[in-house]
Length: 393
Image 1 (cartoon, rainbow, N blue to C red):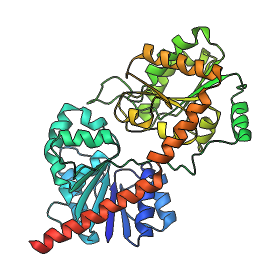
Image 2: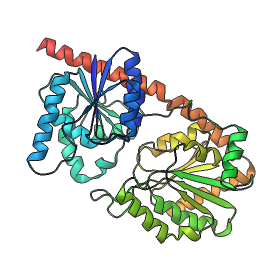
Image 3: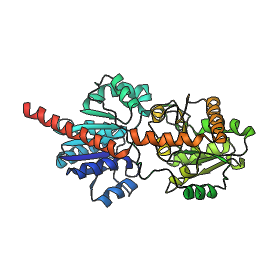
Image 4: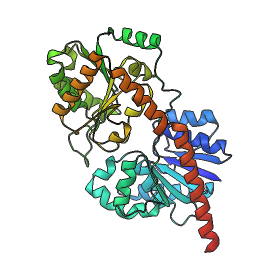
């Protein structure tokens, strides 16, 4: 079969690559439709694999006016020309565009949802209650997302839950030498409790939690301030720059608000090429998001690092009581309490065992390759069912 992968970014979205690889290994033809413009990491990775990449006629920006209509009609012509058996799309703007552009075409429409944030807007949720019925299948990137779509009226059969997963071969527990070198780079001794948070800084969204960054950096920095009052031997490593110009500005606000420059217990680095160095040095990872799918907690778990996560979205799915802690979202006091519990385990020498259990859980439930196989199965089934309906019409 032929699959058209449509996604509104040429840089992010590399979590689609395992799906592309699996489909091509099965002999299927994959073509990617990406936004027009400059090179990006996803575009390069697709080119390196020999996947055909088409510059979308639509820029995935829904603005009032004739340009949006022209773009959608252009995308429709492209999809008709590609003649795929399945149009497979990720991210909400891509879903809106594909649903409209592919109306009346014979291709099956499969939406895979990487996170629940947009569903937390009452306005978007009301619209989505109607528009999601244009999808043949809506794959939830977590059980949480799949449930949210069932609450909108879709059946369980049309809403399978498949994680994007984590590459458990690339993200693996570090050797003793690798861990020591990573901690040396932070000037952290064996008795230093190292906590990490790996996340881009996203500026506040207008429709969801206005005025707040969704990743919860402010929650962690507030909790850390309380936690380290009598624990100056602890270190917090924040890894992630602003996602865009607005994110850079918001990060600058956080740096000033929490006076990070003068806090010797906090290091905040912009994004790096290999986040594994950060996990290799860490004793504990924190994901304090206000909204999230599985996020960085899966990478941490795969590298044998236990996590503290908020109860937002699908984060509680990433661990169990033996491998980490779940705290209420937007609750710095509760987060400080979990940090104290992790610190006590670190001092007692039992925290590493939590990391081992986290790794075992990641291998069992969130390995990327089985997840990619499950996505490919869904696409094949959707194509067969659409062909069957056409034949019976």
